[in-house]
Image (spheres, one colour):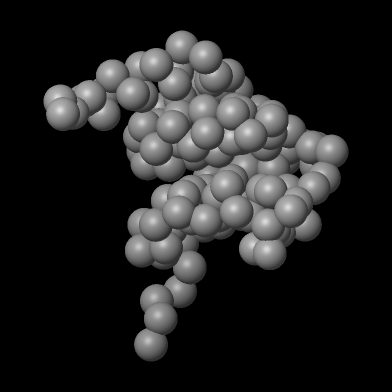
Length: 130
């Protein structure tokens, strides 16, 4: 069976989901009705994250969003705007497409955390773990 390149999957997801550019998310970052969701791996997040963002690892995201799941997280049951991000926008595009298929409304940071940092977005760097 042929393998579909991941770039094609990302392009297909991006064609049907809402994307937000970095300056727009920067302007929205302090809005109490916006929840920024960092889906990166815990090791990536340990190097810095967007202030106020919540961490929802990509591997658990669908389970945390689904109210019928034993892993559901109440943060996803709020009437808020959810904006997902990863490092470059690929994983978050695929994640938003999957959530959209579940009936959940979300968008993603088109160019990811890397662009957030490059454009001078605020970053929280947690203290090193002992």
